[in-house]
Length: 622
Image 1 (cartoon, helix red, strand yellow):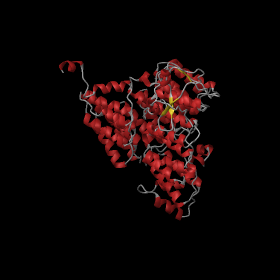
Image 2 (cartoon, rainbow, N blue to C red):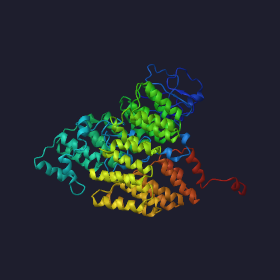
Image 3 (cartoon, one colour):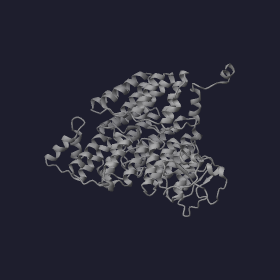
Image 4 (cartoon, rainbow, N blue to C red):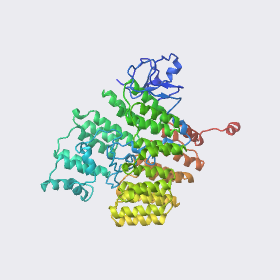
């Protein structure tokens, strides 16, 4: 349904990945390509067998929904191949993380902190809520309209309070007691409790609430209710358990929403192989191809294999799928990551030609890439456009501006924007200001904002972790320890964000073993999942030493925590073997098992640790 088929496709084209090797691809082709060699390298789209089928470029799509002209190997990651971080999308990726939100209220930080019973609340997009990954709204979001969510987002229902006070990990007895006492168990009350639990990433209790409501039949579940439960299962128990759950629900509810939710969680967990598999499953079930499904693949390919992006665009064009604003945002970020500023600007032009004006998040991504490329004037121009004529009237942009001006090193501009907020600040603005002053090495100013924030609000771990990271970045171990003690005194639950700051704090102080010990103890005490950077910063330090034993130990723990199949951690692990000057036997098989295809940089590293490699000297001696 979604793919063109060719009866005599050679085996290499039936399965495996894409390999775009043409000098120019116009996504509205009008000319037949007769040369068989060129056809053999033409883009492939996902076929019904779980592999990929080649598209003959002779096709004429008729009413094409959009046009892109891609230069040679446009979205290949080769432009940034020398930097392993370009190949990995973790919690430190600031260029696009805010654009990949899987559920309306949840930040893409879920990729690194989808933990149970954590009070690390999400960023609150109070002024401009968005659901960038277009995940279908679950019942807890569907009931409360956008307007009510804005006015009640910080409200905590009585049911939620009762759940929070539940001793231990199980909440079933508390829920039973709640009903026995005659309290109302309405859909709106349940929805508000779910919103608050999700906002704090307390997915364990959210799942228990959902399962209890279904078991006790307090609500008649509809497809979105099942999708909400599926989302929680995927976050807590993984994609396999989520797939099993789909088969357990009534067949009439196994619709597109369920698989959209599962596909979005493949993106959250950065599981490219499973994402392609689910994409194919949706095709086999004859769901219509949507921009949502294509966007998920685009995000995965942006993170893992940029050269495949062009093939998804071909598929969208051939199936007449109109790109959404997120489609353009992904392409803009992919171009920026590949240091292709001209290409990035062309995508912006295409976006505007499609009558889609770049929003604040898109402009923020553009600014970050301009800064990275050293194009300061262009970055400043967009920042002024973001401000508008009256910053006080455009107040909600301030927290973004604070960060971006700090990235430019413009302390005067940070101070100017902060003065707009200072008299009646929002907590999100305070956190951005602390981060901004920290980047500018103005610790006193950062501490002053933190103290102001502490007097106005009851602080959470997330609020404190912002200042803790400032201390970590500036190797201020004593102040960091004092802040952690203060957090404990005021009753903050110490969660993954705090662990991450503590780990960085000790690593910066040169106490890597202490950082390793703290992280391991934290996991044992809470059973929560650390974020990716907590592991990787320790792994990097062990790798620099050539400490293979501890590097492999951290690598193993990462896989246990669910961070498997990431190129970045393999880069670092192989560095440990290179620095130790010993071969890494079986490393290619490990990469293959994790479905990782080495880029140029990784391939070069692999030759250095190949125990069976022969040098010219060894050939002479043999």
